[in-house]
Length: 204
Image (cartoon, rainbow, N blue to C red):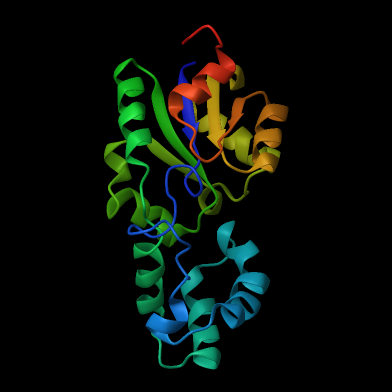
């Protein structure tokens, strides 16, 4: 293994910093915006294009908020979302740091739009822990599309069989395996040692 690709949401980042609950748990209480209309008017119709980089998030979100929550500024909602979806798995980060010391390159491989991807690397500080981030809006394809894995592999500069990948979505694991990555399905409570042992049972 020369490269370890790590998913973000559901693996490295899990909900609100205080309790791990979904970021929108108290959205209506805190900002006066129920989640249902946001899902219906914004995420359902526009997210596929936004998360694959075909359009930026701000214009669509601004227009939707003007209709369903005119009292909320776009930047206010984005800030609330990012801050409340940022609980890091510190044990995993520590284990990844040890792996990196051994010469393994670390990359994030994630479905993200441009704003949160940049926030994760800069504001949350993941740029100090990873060599780069490969994300759907930048690549133009989202996991489990084979093009995502093809482009990420090319950018990493290695062969598919030299890559290990951890992700919490079964469909992403299947897509990665089809491309030739060594993929492990990340489940709650798992550690990096557990994941490595799936591929190398004699490691422990």
